[in-house]
Image (cartoon, rainbow, N blue to C red; front, top):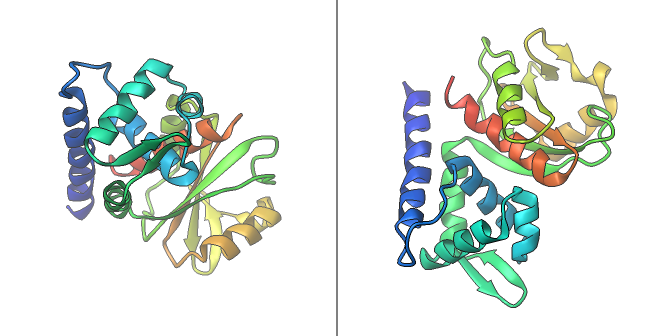
Amino acid sequence: MERSLTHTKTDTMLEEFLENWRRGTRGPLPQLTPLQVLNALVLIDRDGPLGRRALAHSLQLKDGVVRGLTERLAENKLVSVGDSGVQLSTTGRTSLHKLYRSLLVKSIMALDDSDLVPNHRAIGVHLSHAYRSSMTGVAQRDAAVKAGAQGSITVASLSGKLTIPPDNKDLARVAPKENARLREAFKPSNQDLIIIGFGQDAGSALAGALAAVVSLQKE
């Protein structure tokens, strides 16, 4: 029941913002998915101030759509737009952190030069106590691919080890360098998850990681 309520709360928060964006004073704009809005907010938070073209490139959206998005974000006082680009406001950062909490997200980090996914850009998302014994990671991989990434890998912290479901392969044996880095960077507790999205560029890797995280709420 708790996970179902979390899923509903997350979807409602994103949909509520999207509905406000669609109803902006300048008339209707092309629809975006809640995931794309979340991705935009995370990118702006991580890399802002961010120029519109750079944001459009990372989101793989047309300039006009991103212009409309940033205008509506500004109307809702979630971002400020200046000569150097767009960045989250205090209200926007508070709203994003509420979304993080509803998704159980503790932190997000770029994982460059990973021996787990060599020759790819990778982003890791640390989730608090999100492990379930029935999980396989397949639904998360499929969601990541659908979002434009090349895939995702689910890593679970169990009994002092980092393992890969469903057969719980020991990450220290599969990718010792990444195992050491994830332990040091995230310091995961028992039954935490680390979702790693990977792709040809950082934008697709982040989109995949976030899609995989959101998919967990739907299981």
